[in-house]
Image (cartoon, rainbow, N blue to C red; front, side, top):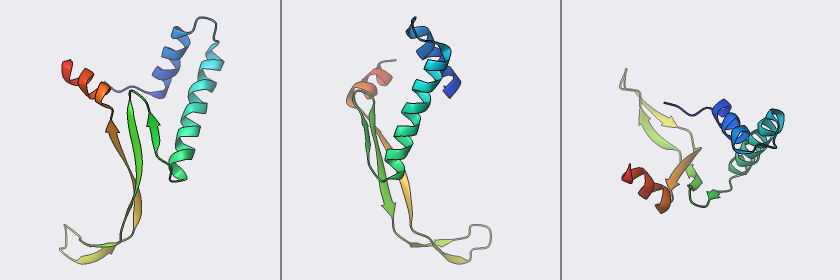
Length: 95
């Protein structure tokens, strides 16, 4: 099963009885916008009890086309890694 943005909105809406559906949508959208903005700017995103998203720079490197075997240079790029918190890891492994 995959948790979607719509599922998150529904969960926030159900958790907070005084919140409207539109307010729940706005809350989830704002959180995601702020999170994406931080990662795009190159900042790490730490969510206590959940984990840490890190932005890492990959250098240009030699690669190979697996279909043809031709060598090529892969461009430098940025990637996002995720490391779960110890709390989350323990809960996942307890299941």
